[in-house]
Amino acid sequence: MITELTKGVYWVGVVDWALRHFHGFELTTHRGSSYNAYLITDEKTVLVDTVWGPFQEQLIENIREVIDPAKIDIVVANHAEIDHSGSLPAVMRHAPKATVIVSKRGLESVEGHFHQPWNFQAVQTGDKVSIGKRELIFVEAPMLHWPDSMFTYLTGDNILMPNDAFGQHYANAFRFNDEVDQEELYEEALKYYANILTPFSGMVSKKIEEVLALNLPVSMIAPSHGIIWRKDPLQIVKKYQEWASQVPEKTAVIIYDSMWDGTRHMAEAIGDGLAAENIPYKTFYMPTADRNDVITEIFKTKAVIVGSPTFNQGLLPTITPILEDLKGLKFQNKIGAAFGCYGWSGESVKIIEDHLATCKIPVITEGIRAKWQPKPDDLARCREFGSTVAGAIRK
Ligand code: FEO
Image (cartoon, rainbow, N blue to C red):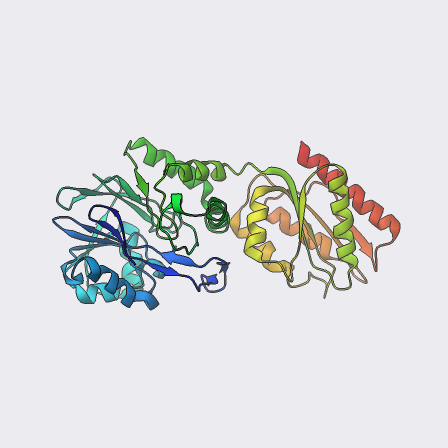
């Protein structure tokens, strides 16, 4: 069902209730998602972004509820990733003479995806296109989250359409932030930020300052996933500023795997050491934990404590993917520590510590190892280790 945001501006997107994985299997989406496309009717008819290709017919039907798709004059492709551009070919079959507005880098990426001789217009920050009573103003937003990403602003109604920024993978019966469960909304907005935008936090801060300096009134922020920010729309901008600063909570996250429970007993004893010092912590057993949810918890926390027994002179394979995530996500203001059992060679703790150093997560105390099953004095060392990490968290 389409939704009118303001007079002549419509949400014509698609809610994908069934989606549970995104970017292939890189990101879990427990609450589905939506692909938001916006139709603006003025003297010219404009479509801002499309939807993922499998939903192209639904997009066309949604547009048809307002206007014949053949009457579209302008299609803005804020970003080429196919969850937003995947239905461009279908739209362009209906409106082959439409102008496709892209950022300069978008010219490269959209052409690269579709190899079509469409009538492109590449724009840069500050460029304006009149569509009748209103104008579109464009702001390039490279690395939020691709080099081609762009925001589109609609004057008159003062709607900012920032594509992926400020979005959430959150399917819902309703479209606006004042209509949905706030806890769910912010859980999904944070998971989205932590898993997708963290590496670009410096650019997030700069871009927000740049957009605010334009002094454009903003009555709505309409991202391309999830809920539209209508009530106090700048609340999510303030949250992004806070998240981009990456100031951690004084807490810890313990992630581990275990072959025969030795490393598990160590994890529990480390947790006891943290709790004895009144430091809240969460423990995740990686074979059953959701990696993206764990990343969200790591985003929030100060201390990342990683445990694995030694397996084939390395780590258990469930630990390696999240360590790789830590490298790519470039978390700031963290401290780290490592632990693990071993039977013969015992390299795992050193491997984890080296990896944390590569991630620029300083290891704040010597890693703790236990041979075979941890003995009572090993577990006492683990509790002491937890207490040492607690002290570093408090600093
Ligand atoms: Fe970068 Fe929602 O795609």
